[in-house]
Length: 122
Image (tube, rainbow, N blue to C red):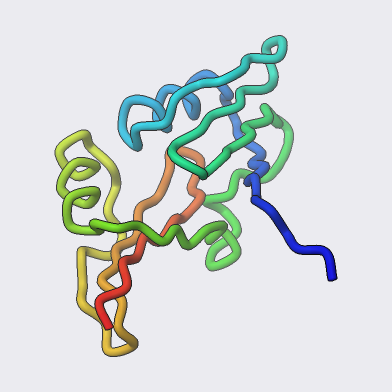
């Protein structure tokens, strides 16, 4: 059976420039491509983000629990947590060792997208 070989997150954002700067300056992504004024493609390790400017759409922050878009598995959640916190990331859930064997935390982007980052500690 064929397998999924990767993934990309496609996100609607209010300002592609503001969001792209956040992903780069705070979360450590690199911009790999800019397409016109409306699209930015970014990467961090094997994670790919495609930001599309959609100024007339409902911002993710107004969708409540539907604003969660990703759970990223990492090899050192504590180091990433400290780095992002120092760079001004909005922390919704502090670094916590969970009973299900994950060390995780949650951040919110300027558009309100929520990302949980976790490390297997089981």
